[in-house]
Amino acid sequence: MSLPKTLLAKRLGLARSTLYYRSKKREVDEVARTLIEEVMIGNPAYGHKRIANELGWNKKKVLRLMKKFDLKPKLRRGQYWQKKGDQSLVPASYPNLVTNWCPIASDVVWYADLTYLKVRDSFPYLATVIDGYTRDIIGFAISRRHNRQLVKAATLEAITSRGCLPRYFHSDQGSEYQSEEHLKLLENRGVKVSMSQKSSPWQNPFQESFYSQFKLELGNLNHLSEGEIVKRIYQQILLLQLPPDSHRSQDATQAVLPKSSEQRCLKDGVLAKTDKYFCFGCIVHIIYDAHYVRAVPF
Image (cartoon, rainbow, N blue to C red; front, side, top):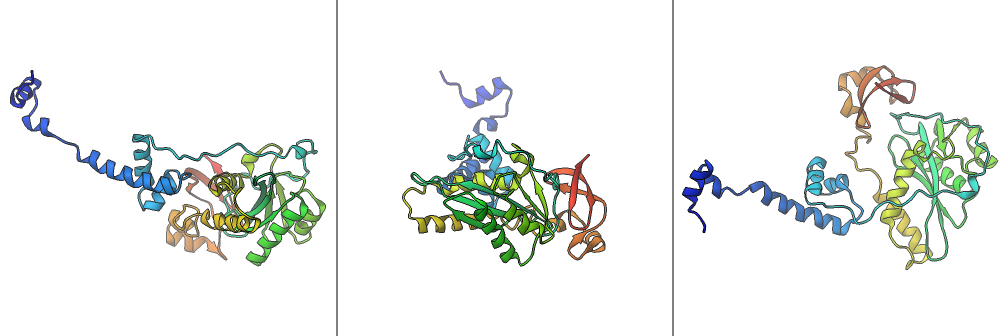
């Protein structure tokens, strides 16, 4: 038997109007859920940050809604690719010179790597070069073989597109990057070569992050011709460039340092003083050098 709302409210010790309450937040969240799902249908690999960028919303709001409604990307990142032929190589004599470095100017550190793309029964290889400050792909090359010519072509394209050389060139210890031809290309021009330790992909994080997302969103290439594959790769590289409001964009230093302070310590596009600021979401103590900063956590 149902009780009258007046009697029920009295027994519960509540105001009668409480029984008529209907959350407006729930209705708003349902509308937002529909918009998020529409973005995810067209972009099945998007996480909360990229969905927020697509909708122009705060990323925390999107993350809250995705957790609330258990919304997850349909495409997930796969396993890390390893070249079996490189596992038996003697460790390189080049140390990792850029550990925990946060470049604050372009063309200070370039990060290089290569990966494979499965197309039917063949494996085209893609080599890329990323600028450590802008996180943009500044050079890439495609080949049916992973050899020194492939990585050299990507490096030369980066040099051509930027019109200059980096101070540091960082890669893994792959045989392609240890080749005499590629090392001479850099060292004869005054570039300092830096290499990750063996079996340490996390020491080349920008490349690993890029490739995992790139291959995820590139999709199935089996139905495409060679020319269409190259076109798809080029388009996908352009799509995965970081948005202009990224925390590591060209305006990153302006976002974390007072303008007056920046004007005092900025010389030739480079910061040169000791200070504290937010970097990669963590408070760090920054030791400023001529063209880079080394992040040392408190």
